[in-house]
Image (cartoon, rainbow, N blue to C red; front, side, top):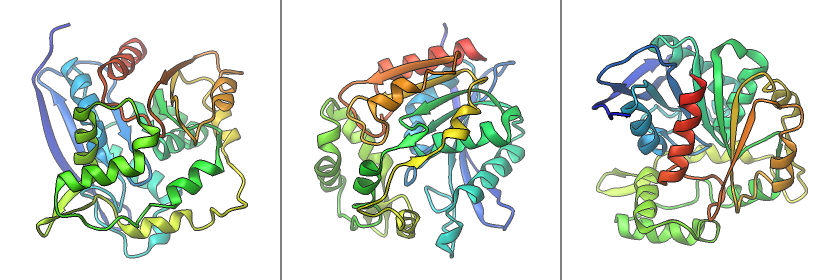
Length: 292
């Protein structure tokens, strides 16, 4: 397939409460009838995580929207951390789609983004043409949540990308032994942003409060009803081979009662696969091409 030139535009919309939300709109040179793709990041992640995937999909003639939730990326931070909730974010996503003129899409959701997809399946299934759920499922292991809680909001500003990269490798290296140097550098660029001559994380540290209820004795988070609602929706589930949020047992059980399910394991990566390597991008692009 011939590759198209891609236009990348940064756009802002207003949430229902007036907070400014940001998304990146990837537009192919020639747009046709292909279903657009909407990319939803993880808890502390941003639209930058999807740059390589979005470029690849847009080069194939498909519009792609990559969203920043409130408090992340270029979206405004909320003055009340309690509004960093799934319900508020669901409403923000729908407001962004309405502003962008998107009524139905193929959704790609990493971690928290996958939770949003499952919730939409239960509440707004008409907007889902198909879905890619990246390293999340109906049972979210508490051990992985405790690991994430241990560092969210606690990493200090750093003076350079090289030091940021070293810090990132220290935190994530055990789960991601298969990353190339190029992928580590892309991961670092998507994790940090420049502020006042230093590098800082791309999210409001107050997001750490979202995990306040996760403790030593916490059990898994359950989204069984939401996952059941995904049964009629063509879905590709991706699992990192080293994931500690989506267990191998849950990953295998997700096929039960879901005849339209496809699965992909990304070896040498943990939670969540970064969608940076060519084989994974090609697998997602192939799924999207076949489903809309």
